[in-house]
Length: 145
Picture (tube, rainbow, N blue to C red):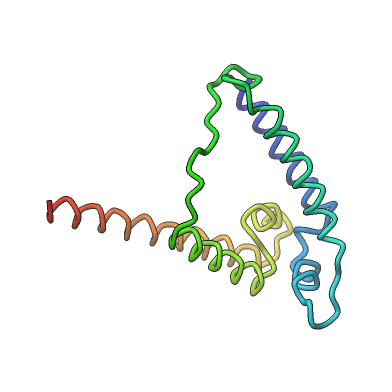
C-alpha cells in the first residue's frame, strides 16, 4: 500500500510541476530574472505550495503516526549553520543557471530533451562526490581519534 501511495503522490507531484510550468526552464529563469522580463506566475505556484505544506505540517503536529501507520519523522534540528547556507546557495545558483531543480528535472526526463538529462547526470554526480567526501572525512576523523 505504501508503494502505491508513493506512486500516486509522485504522479500528482509531477503533473503539478508540468501544469504549473515549473518543469519549463525558460519559465523558471523568467521568474528569476528580476531585472529583466520578470514572470511572477511562479510566485503564485510557490505560495500555493507553501500553503499546502503549512496545512500538512499543521495537521501532523500532534500525530505520532502517519496516515498509513508509519511513525512520524519530522525534522527537529532548526540550526542554520555553514553547511546549510552553502548548500542553499549552491542549490539556488544551480536552479538559476539551469532553470531546473531536482523534481522538475526528473519530471522533464520524459520529454527526451538533453538538458534535463545532463542536469540529472550532473546532480547525481554531485551527490556521489559529496558522499565520497563525507566518507573520507569520517574516516579521517576516526583515524584522528
